[in-house]
Image (cartoon, rainbow, N blue to C red; front, side):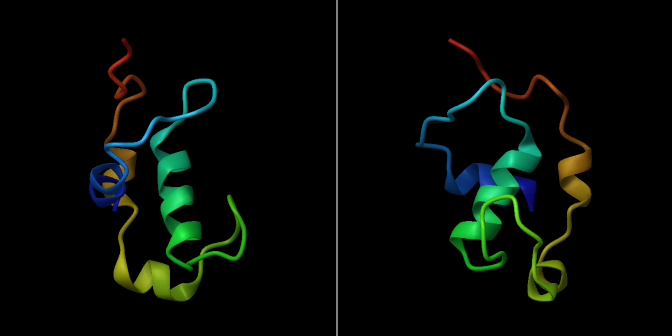
Length: 66
């Protein structure tokens, strides 16, 4: 799931103080209709289609800061 979210948002700037991979997944879930609000509870469909396991493997410093 994390890999797909990062791929889809690769050309967009990230706002905020050091966003986490979970923040990117939250944006994905909201924009694709798997939650009714940003940072909201994700639907059962989300968990049926996607696994959050890959997000746990991402390190803290995954962003390339320029």
